[in-house]
Image (cartoon, rainbow, N blue to C red; front, side, top):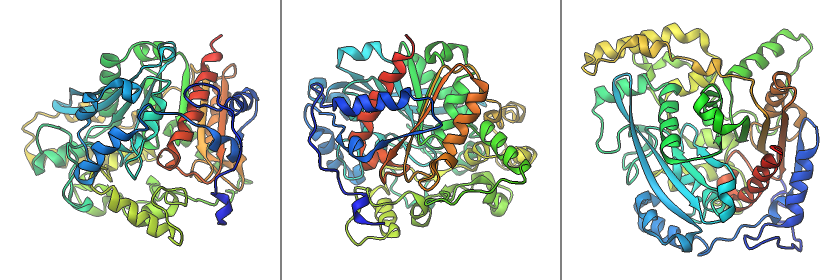
Length: 482
């Protein structure tokens, strides 16, 4: 790639309001979303011009992170800071819930905006994918202000860490030796880890997510599931209590899934003798479920976590807008540095069940049940986990509703694996949106790409600009209600 592809555009900008959002870039986003097209793209110059001011420039949160080993600051300390200096009131919330007779914890960093207009807009609930947690949506890789801080200047934001992926103080053990923190007040013993990992279905995550949302937010909302977390908005669509607040809205950022629609697309391609996959700059991220030897680890393969490595991240995630990039670094160099910097506070692991339920592996349901049964037998099952309760939850992602939507927007980075920089019409999200159009013919369904070299992790590459874009996208979505 030429360096000119990621150099900043030099332009004169006019500021629309105190937050620093550029008026013409916002108008351009609205104009693009107004178009009934399979996809549209925002130019690099417009994207880079988007600015959002923080009252203290993010200084206080950065100081908290710099003082903590590995940047793993205690989110409860953010709540002690003066909201006026942040632009939002911060609260760290932990909800404990029970499923399969096991207790689970889910955490959320709630950022209640001080902007008076936020009360008239939906809560933006950001949910991490398989290996991340709240940190990467709140601060960048150099502990500078992150996506959530900028969003909270105009919108109420709830950043969620799925069960197991957050640990107070982070993990001291190397990535290949650490266990999930499904409970935040104590470590689990090996038998507990085996069983928790073996029954970690999307229904577990969804139950915790719903409890967190219902107990700690009010009014309209949108759920932004990043990467593997993209299955959760689909599951919420079947829930009357949440659909009343979602009001037919979907907002995606690097959103994977849902597997139900992906499986339909795969079947259509397989049945088409003329179909040929288009070349791509990025390829896959190495997490495709169908390519893995799931049972390589033996009887307890559901306990064999996918551990993040530089090799995995260099395939598609580590590119030249990463904050850690320095001239001369290869993508492997960036990935290696990334995992070094984020080696403590970021989980960097993923359970097999997450990938199995997020990919087209429905045929393995029986094998999953056998593996769970063996895990329960090995431990003696003192918790009274009922296999029948678990098995009926398996692959619930394959049954997420595909109807009932009114306004849907997918936002995608040019170098994201969900996009195709060479053949944008062949991008993954473009195809998924087309399926939703078939099922929701009256809905306004859009895909908008950022036409610069941001990846699946633009929220740590250019968080301020991404927040500015999302603020305008949410405004456009609200306009559609009228």
